[in-house]
Image (tube, rainbow, N blue to C red; front, side, top):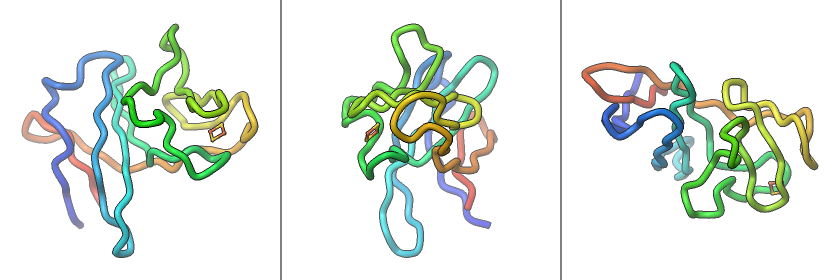
Length: 111
Ligand code: FES
């Protein structure tokens, strides 16, 4: 098992997110982690409609009301805790989850 430090928990208050790079099969990908209520979730930063980042580079993942993750390209809405697209061109598809764990006051990506 490999662990990669993603962020200090102090930098992840409610509704905040952090982006990070990770390797898979020798290729580099971008992921993001988000604190949503009491939980922290992490996904690959790639929409399920087209291979574009959800945030379009500005680090904003949540809708204004904070209820959903949003893809800024065409407005797909995803449930934060499951990654399921509930509205938009990729409805029914899910973001690719990343396994993370909390330890030593930090968030770690586990692969
Ligand atoms: S690229 Fe995300 S909704 Fe189209």
